[in-house]
Image (cartoon, rainbow, N blue to C red; front, side, top):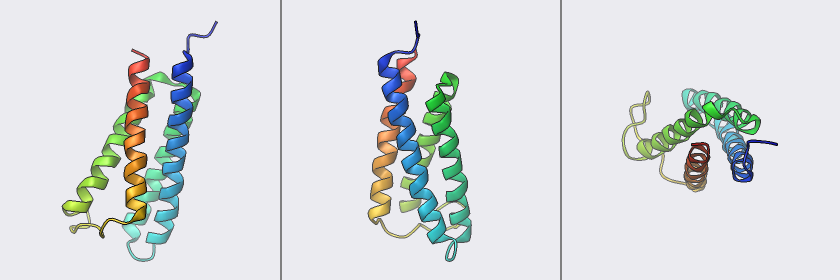
Length: 124
């Protein structure tokens, strides 16, 4: 008999899919930014790869990595929020105004935080 609850399985699938969607969006944005802001574009690529690794680890069910995945989502949310108001790290200036990609990313970040928090709490 499996020790993994149905709730945890559903949260793992949902969390993994959200991380993959987040990565796809950031690969798209990173490729668009490479010409104008190469450092930001490269950061988006690295961040997207980390999100894919996180998604795989969640799909596999490596429980001790659920908390680092939650921290990853929190840090990305804070970076997105902070860079709209204060100078972005490394660039020294706030990033452009809020657009549809930023709003969609905010939504993904909030969903990720909620799902990953529930996932972390489901194993305790």
